[in-house]
Length: 408
Ligand code: NCD
Ligand code: ZN
Ligand code: ZN
Image (cartoon, rainbow, N blue to C red; front, top):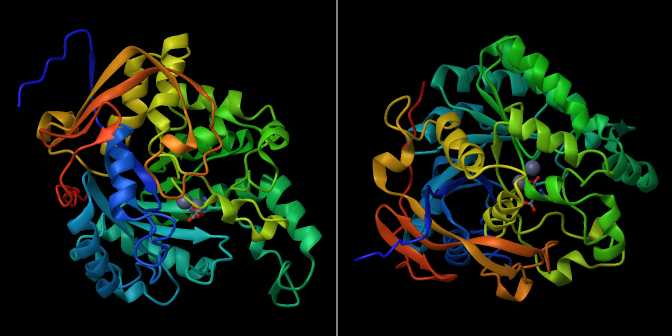
């Protein structure tokens, strides 16, 4: 194919290491087809899929099944997370051999599909993953660990206390980040902090890095562009996401940390739900999370246009840092794009607005409705082949391949 890139910017495809594709189990929210079409249009050429599906990706059989589904539908490349549970530690190595790109640990999950292992099991898991040389991504939040007569606060009927903790006490996330870093230092494990949401974690992250812990950290657009002040516009229940979007005063320090490298990378925690699932009367009945793969690059390019960051800084946080942290490059210093032509062409003069209706995800309940855009990806190539053109996915289903990661 002949490509005319006159006047366009050329960057590597974004690598989003935090995506909930939803299949198997929740295909009414998203499928491998819809998620990877959204990713392609959004300039994302590799997604790492989270294991909180049904069944959860906690065994070789579940991983094989997900590889089959992804392989037949995906139009961008993908890595699959394996789940770390208290009862599957003896299977982590086999899952790694079966192609798990990374592993995910939930601290503070109340989802029975992905229960939260006790600290002893977390340390045991970190020891195994350290030996395997695989980075482990941690959902570092601990509110459900505060129990009352052996039950979580919510299960024990103390819903006001549980609500207050989940929505307002960001020290519950700070504690879990700090505990993760301590366990990583003990075991020598490489860990990755998912969806960093609060400025109060930043000193703990800096402290761990200064002590030599192999810690990487991501944040997501909803923590950079929103605050609790947006609850009035969007509805507090709609805004529910884990961890919660914080009060005004956090986004600025998170931006600074992302630009100075304390936070290594940008991911999205792409967590699509139907609008009906996000707009229920009781906050606990509202599904947490937002779609993100299609809106992250355009949101950031609008900030590039405003001069808040350079395109080079964006490439560092969205393309290079994830490739480096998760071992997706053939040699140190060799950029992923040089290896296999995952490329995005950007038209920095193109303007528009985000609309839920225009997104390719099934669960399209975006908090960024109406956000003004300046700079958009106009063509996305995966391994040299165009998979999205002018806002439309064009890739053939099944073009996406599992990534190979280097273990160190
Ligand atoms: C995620 C989801 O819906 O799967 N939701 C969220 O609010 N982030 C789960 C998660 O990442 O913890
Ligand atoms: Zn999470
Ligand atoms: Zn998530």
